[in-house]
Image (cartoon, one colour):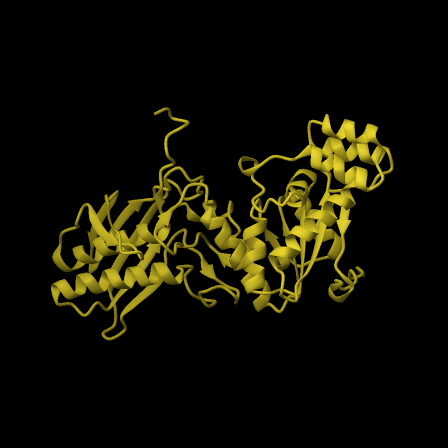
Length: 374
C-alpha cells in the first residue's frame, strides 16, 4: 500500500496522555517503581498502553511524562511532552488539579471549567480520577493527591490556538472526550468553536460572527464593531458551527467568508474544506443568469479558474452575483437551524476584505446599529 493510500493513523488526546502520565506517577509515588508502558482505560472502555518519555521521583513527589502522538491529525500539540506530577494531598480531599508550565488557566465564564481553575476539561479530569482510584484501590491508599499537569513550551503553542480568545491564559488546554484523535476531524478546533459560542452566550451576547478566515473576520468585526468574544473562528466547519448554535442558540449569527467558501455553502456543502468538494462553476453561472446575467457572462463564469474570477466577471457586467451567492448560502444555513429563533446573515468578502455580497438578517433579527466612535 502506498503512503498516499494508506489509512490515516489515529492518535491520542492530551487528556489520555495526561491520564497515563498521572497514573504512572501515582503508582511510583506509592511503590517506588514506574509502570512502563502504563495502561489506561479510555471513556469507551478500550485499554491503551503508553510508553513513558520521562520519569523521576522527588521528595514526596513523582513525575512522569508521555509524548503526545496525534497520529496523522494536524494537531498543534503533536509531539508535545505531557507531564504529570503527583504529590500527597490533604486527607479526605480526593484528587485536586493544578496547572504547571504550559497549561492554561480559565479566566472567563461559559467554559466547562469555572474561572480560576486549570484548563483541564471534565472528561480528562474524570479519566485521571478513575485512574488514581484504580491504583489507590490496588495498593490500599486513600487516593488523596494533587495532580499537576504541565506541557513544556505549551504557552508558545497556545498562541497558535484560540485559547486567548476563550479566556484561557498561560498555556494550552487538556482536552478530549473519547481519548482518541481522529485524523482530520480537527476535534480541538471544533471544541474551540463550541467553547467560543458558550463564552459568548455566558457573556450575554446576542450577536456572534463566525468566519472562515482572518480576512473575513477582520472585515465583519469592522462592520459591526464586535467584541473579540463575539468572533468565532470556524474555519471550514460551518456545519458544525450551525448545528451547535441550533442547540445552544444565539439570536443572531453572521456567517462571513471569502467568495469560494461561501459559494460552496451556497451549493449545499457544510464542510468547506477543499477535500470535501470544489466550487461548481456551472451552478454559479446559473445563479448569475437568474440575477439577469447574459449567456456570454455564463460562459465566462464556467470558464473561470476560481469563484473570485467569476464574481469579477459578474461585477463587470453589473450583476450582483455576490448577493445571489449570499442568498443561496443563507437558505442552506437557515435550513440547519430551522425551528429555532436564530437569525442568519451571510456576508461575502474578497481577498482584500471588501464586501462583495450580502444576505442580511430578516427584519425580526436585525442587528443593532454600529456604535459610533467618539
